[in-house]
Image 1 (cartoon, rainbow, N blue to C red):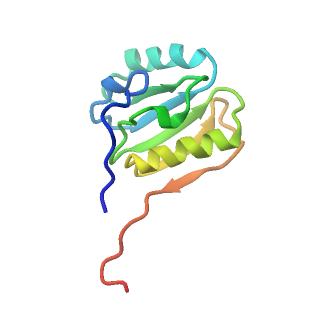
Image 2: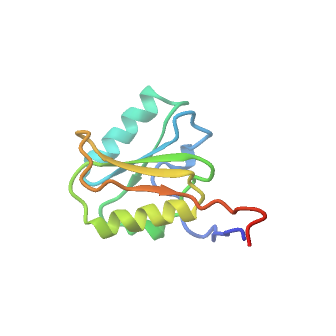
Length: 125
């Protein structure tokens, strides 16, 4: 079963700049600092890391996430409600992310989330 998405949803901020990054997609969540960090990443790692931003006031399902076939690191720049992070993880897996990991900017894992995309097993009844 394939998942299709409406192309009427916008890409997240910096989504048009995702072009087969070798180190996956990095999504910065929380605070206005996310925009500044995304700009730095684009400048310093233009081909290896694709930065995206989930704005504070936006629901994860508002966007069309360009993550199909890629690993995703979600970097929490400030405390987020766990439901919001679960919602983001769900949307990313639904959009085709291979795996989704979360971390805080300081490296602590407040909520350890690892999502694995289900794999269809052939020959299993």
